[in-house]
Image 1 (tube, rainbow, N blue to C red):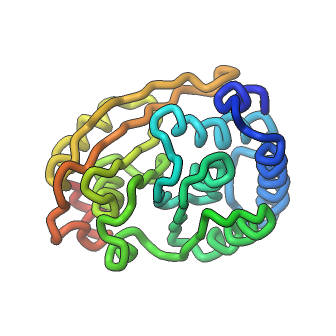
Image 2: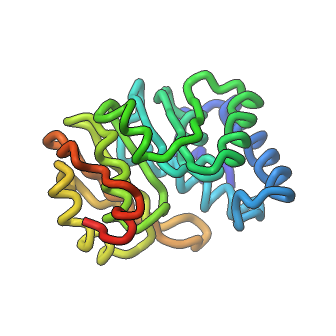
Length: 227
C-alpha cells in the first residue's frame, strides 16, 4: 500500500514513510482502547486514511502554507500533510481525548510544523478569523454546515478544501452558503482510490471577499438551519 503513496509523492523520503508507519502502529494500538476509527486493517488505513489525505497534494501546493484542519478526528488529513509537506498545520477538534492522542502523535513523530488544539471552529474564529491560507475538513458534516464553520477562518484570497464522498448534490446544496460566506467554487476534483476502495470528491473554494461578521452563528443554529 505504501507503493501507491510513493507514486503520489515521488519525492517523499524514507524518513517520512517511517513516521507514517509509526503513526499507523500508534493509531491501531490506541484504537483498541479508544474509538478513533472504524477502519483498522493495514491496507484500508493506508488507502482510506493516508492516501486519501495526501490526495490534497494533487489539488494544492502546501509549501510554506498555513493550514487549519477542522474536526480532524484521528488526525486526517492534518497529520499526513504535516509529515509530507512543509505546511504549518493547526488541527482543531472538539473532543479532548482525540487532541490528547494527536499531541502524543506529534511528540512521538517529532513533528515541529503542527499543533493540535481542543476547540470548536465557531470559537476558534474569535482568535484566528480570516488568518489561514488553507482550511480543510474531511467528511465532518454536510457541506453547507462545513462551509460556515471553515470559511470564516480563511483569509481573503485563501482556500477552503472540502473532502467528501461521491455526492455532487451536496455541493449544489451548499451553493448559497458558499456565496453568502464570500467564496466561489474553483474546481471539483474526482479521484478513485486504489484497490477499489471508493471515490473521493474534493471541492476547492477560493475566498474572494471577507465573510460577514455575523458568521459563523452558534453551532445549534448552523446545524438546525444551514445557510
